[in-house]
Length: 234
Image (tube, rainbow, N blue to C red; front, side):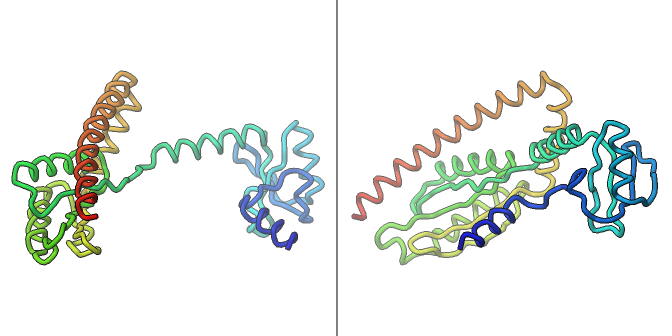
């Protein structure tokens, strides 16, 4: 059992980069940090070549025959690799699933409010799940909820694609829409502008904060309504 745990822990660390004397193959193809090649040579000679330059021998392509190694500053290599990973992670678009709740008896004015909230979510690059909650005998007339969801989707056709058509889930009916590619492209372009212009970035951060505060207020109202409904059902 102990051996199984050790193997599992080792696997979780992912592939390890072999450096200097951890490179145990008999020969390697050596490349300098500037891209020039020293060619294939015994690993022992490659190590001497690296030591003579005050650098490290780093295995960069272990699957090649023979493996390819670079002579470089391994500390700097790790720093730049970590920096690249952080930059790639920062540029990733995180898509959240926001929920907009309503009832079969939600009136036209409140439906317009739900549409505006959904548009804000979509314009921020998030998906939206519309959830219609049935109470009591309302569940015997699901066509009302179906009509509401179809109408909501029509109001968002310029921003969203339907990812899940209306379907029943217990005592609710739900549908999911996601932002169109053009919306995500616009967000990526805006993000690039903010990164290039520090002043623009600061303004964008403030705008985003205001939007979140408004969304939280709307969600609180919905949660209060839902709480009243649950108490009544009980």
